[in-house]
Amino acid sequence: MINETRLFAKFVLLAALFSISNGIVANPRGDEQAQDYAALVRLFDDWRAFESAPSREGVPDYTATTMASQLEGLKGFRQRLEAFNISDWPVAEQVDWHLLRAEMNGLEFNARVLKSWQRDPAFYTSVWTAQSDTPAHEGPTHHALIELWTYDFPLSPAASTQLATELGGIAPLLQQARINLTGNARELWVGGITNIREQADALRELALRIPASDTVLHEAIDKALVATESFISWLVEQSPSKNGPSGVSKEHYTWHLRNVLLVPLSWDEERYLLRRELDRAHSTLKLVEHSNADLPPQVPIANEAEYAQRAEQAVVDFRDFLVEKEVLPPYPYIEPALRGQMGRFVPADQRNFFYMVSHHDLLALWTHWYHWFDLARMEADPHPSPVRRGALLYNIWMSRAEGMATGFEEMMLHAGLFDDTPRSRELVYIMLAQRAARGLGSLHAHANEYTLKEARDFHVEWTPRGWMREDLDLLGFEQLLYLRQPGYGTSYVTGKYMIERLLAEVAHHQGKDFELRNFFAELDEAGVIPVSLIRWQMTGRDDEIKSMMSPQWQAWPGSQAD
Picture 1 (tube, rainbow, N blue to C red):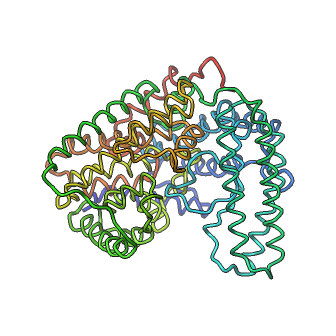
Picture 2 (cartoon, helix red, strand yellow; picture 1 turned 90 degrees about the vertical axis):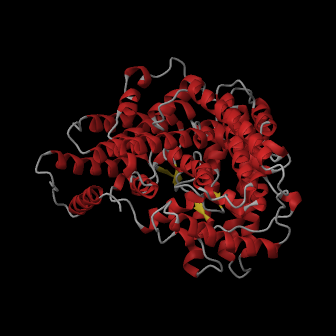
Picture 3 (tube, rainbow, N blue to C red; picture 1 turned 135 degrees about the horizontal axis):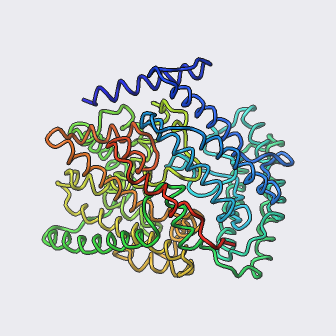
């Protein structure tokens, strides 16, 4: 059973927030601090409205004057935030204060260092054809995305009109981008051209799905495509003049980790941790292969019929394991989430790394599908706190989202999921090695010690069995994403470590009363937020947060990135 005290606390917070939303001053503790929390919620609403870029010609405005004005306006929000005295607040409410602080730090980091609107052409990608498996899209995005995956085809008249209106924003945004993109980050520039070309492909494919009779929408698609292709030509023309670094530097990377992502590590500590995990993954893989030496080889799925049969069985097996073995609470969305991500058969010569894994054993990859449990829970059971209800800005959720999905792979191995398929244990360590290798590559790229090609080469070299291939798009996509978003490439492994550490701490404290199902239930209840804050809420230990609040780590590095 989930702790009754936590359930009562959740009820109290729900009641308080209901009162806030109806204009009532909620004061469940009988003190003045409840009014302060209501004010924090109002600040959160004001902050999110401010953070969304103002409009220029009907599209978000990222011109230099406007972005400088937004950085100046941040000062007032910081003053409002710092005026709160949260020392006597319940931990859950203090956590919300720190989340708001992290988002404000994220805006400052982006405005001072990352400057995606100035340095990164991929920032201006508008068309998204698939839902991300995380609370928001990975990496920096602008504020007027076109989420094609949310549309049902054939389109209704109202949906067609809406889509045409959204597509109408592409041309003015890309025209503005030519003014804004004054940066000299060569690899971001050249890599970003690929993203914009993918938008052009998506628009061509969209045109094929629209009936010829829908002339208004076809005209909107044509204009968007012409603007996109013209922008690609401009980017290519400009690219020879770009010769500067793209990484943010070790110092800025560490500032971002500790002040935005709330990860209590430095660049050097992350490098050490990922190197350790890369070594452990490779050495453990060899030991597991030795143990399995007398077993027949694992034969990949051969055709669509076999894939369909094994996928159906995998859904049932995984659902039953998680619920009947009391790994997770009996969440009603487990099976629907799995059925929504059953995938498809891919011919052998077209399989990227993850298809290689799934076509050997679907469950080895599906252990990573905790992502879809998170998204289903956020929709079916929204968090009572408005601050945690949706996606945090600036990918601040990455340590929890990617760390949990990655950590769940090895956790389920040790919990017994692959006891009857010992060859699948090899796959778990192959995946861990790949994640550590790509994270290390991204770390050195941000330190400007590796070129993007060198990061990719390291990624390929240290992925076992040659399963990371240079000729498939996945390699380029991953390393470019991690160069665009500091901290993302390492979050799979560092987040995994932080969650494993939290599990150990909770189990040590609870002793014989520890239950795995309750641990995951409490972790989930906290929301998709930085693991350091979840740890504080679950254990009462705020040492990590206090260490990251020290002047040593909040001070800006002396130099600024281009």
